[in-house]
Amino acid sequence: MKRLIILSFAIFLITSCSSNSETSTEGQNNDSLQSETTQQTVAIAYDTEWNRFKNTIVNNDSIAFLTFVGPDVTDPEWLFTMLKEDWVLEDLTAATYADLTISDYNGIPVKEFSAGVEGSDEEGNIYESGIYLYFEESADGFVLVNVLMAG
Image (cartoon, rainbow, N blue to C red; front, side, top):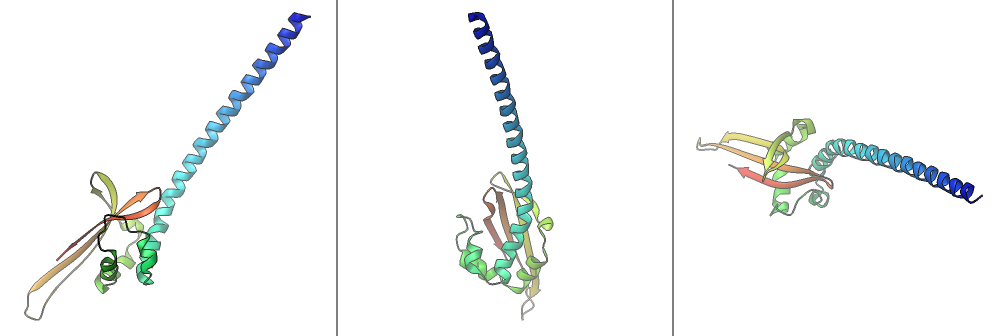
């Protein structure tokens, strides 16, 4: 009788452990699937983030613009004004997320937007100006990490 009880208990333990390992594997599979889905969602979100960024400038929304600006951008108010210049705004509104190039910023791959203009002044002096924006694609969204202006 004791052997029957011990045997029944052993079978119960084996059955219990095997169902726990199946549950654990299912949990791991669900975690992997959820991680893949999150990565796909993030990739899709950057396209939306780029459009949101452009809309902050087009709609003259300086408060929303600041949500995209990283801590290394020293004068975001002046930058916001600069981005509303006709020559920048024209290129900015036309650029899609797919148009952004991949660049390097301190060893980190970033998305780069650039706009440029050339012309001449009243005295015939030729000038060129350009602006380059560098965006990091982070888990928190699209972050403007650096700006370069020349001209």
